[in-house]
Length: 370
Image (cartoon, rainbow, N blue to C red; front, side):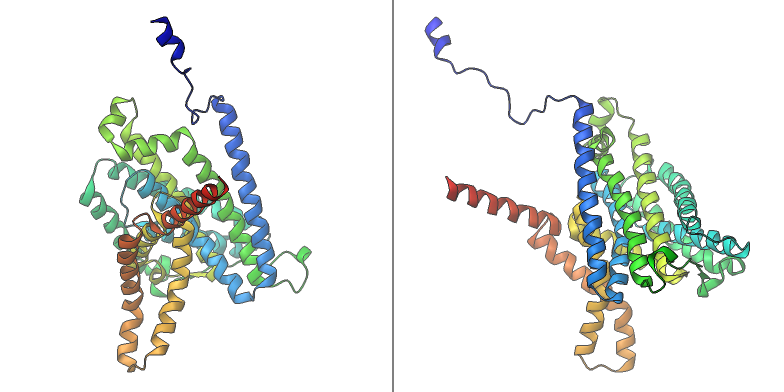
């Protein structure tokens, strides 16, 4: 018996176990995320000096959409709640920032500090709406949840048309925005300033989301997504967790809509139709559901799709009536085809495919070294 015990290999602790205190793990995660955000910010500033003004505007639009796709990734990918109404949440943030900026302009108030206040009010307003929807969504499952959010996507733009005395109907509202600060120079390009503004807001939102995902709240989100019964037995308040996920997602969607309104300097119900909600959901699925990096690919696709559609229609000679019909339906068709192809070829989305390729290349490199 003693010889058997002596021959037995010593017990080893699993290499994956991290025995550091939770405070140290959280601190290192925060520092890592801060480093990524700083590097991304520097790259964004450098890119703003090397591309033409229109590309700066496109990058700024990608940043605005990224707020919405990142929030929807947290809601659907990490918490398992299907939302078809994020376009309406973006509209709420856009109209709120329009009202705030117009009120400041009517009172003769000027200054760069007014826009952050308007963005904050837009986020709070969208959070309030998201909390109301989230409480209702926490009681629903599957198609019933999708039906409620779908109704929100239809009702909110319709309200802006019905109460045209407040929202100015289909023509929408203007969004007064201050020019770039004089400290940047009298000839500083406005599109570059737009990119800096939206990029800073988006990177801050992504920093908060990334830390939320890696925190205990992110773990509870995933636990509820995987098995609500097991999560409830583990002591997790399922309904409260679902409402919190919806509120966080609504806040980022409101910020994204507000930034889009600032970029366009106007807001109208046509910009936040049901099609936008469908595009947002398909974008996060194509990019990689459950991954914040996948939300980046989804936002890029949302901006690149109109250019792709325009290029396709230019290659084919069509009658004006057919071209007008395709202009509204072709983007949705291209999105649908792309979604089908990605789900067949790469079920984990673009980011999942890139992750698998990276692991395969790393494995091959290690095998060659050994």
